[in-house]
Image (cartoon, rainbow, N blue to C red):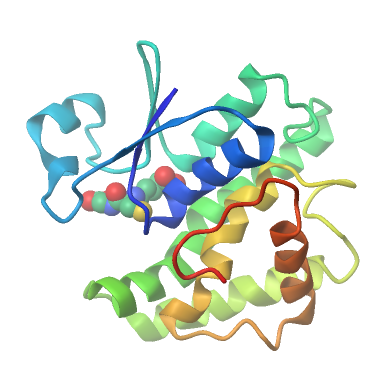
Length: 198
Ligand SMILES: N[C@@H](CCC(=O)N[C@@H](CS)C(=O)NCC(=O)O)C(=O)O
């Protein structure tokens, strides 16, 4: 299994982190992102969106960090991470969508502005980041994990850009339940980090 990766990408980190936590072996290929490799003809042939992460398993190609987490957990029968019960699975999906939408347009965008100089409405992105933090903080006030009694791919999908939120100018410290949850994720056996996460 191969990941077309960028070390500084929180979306790629989701896949690296999940494989580390579950001891799945992964070949990591560093895409020359600054050189535009992800927009080259050969790469667009594999992912017409021109985005990383891109995942390869034999002749199977898959884009989108959330979809990759689902594939890995289902293929490797990691049912604790991807529950098979209808309600729990749908609740995991709910948070995967939150990661792909609200978190992407909030803390992820604010970081893209501050760290990578992307021209976007950073005030709005920071407002959205605070909204994400508040939603998670409230949920985590009476749940140890996002879904059920243990970590799932929902936690892995939501964690990176919340932990990197400070790089977009938003402080997580006032959100005590969020801070507690991020600490619990860092304490998981096999946890690996990325630049920007202590
Ligand atoms: N929904 C995708 C988003 C992937 C994404 O936005 N990747 C960024 C890097 S973190 C990228 O490749 N951006 C280049 C572009 O969109 O042109 C995921 O969760 O993997």
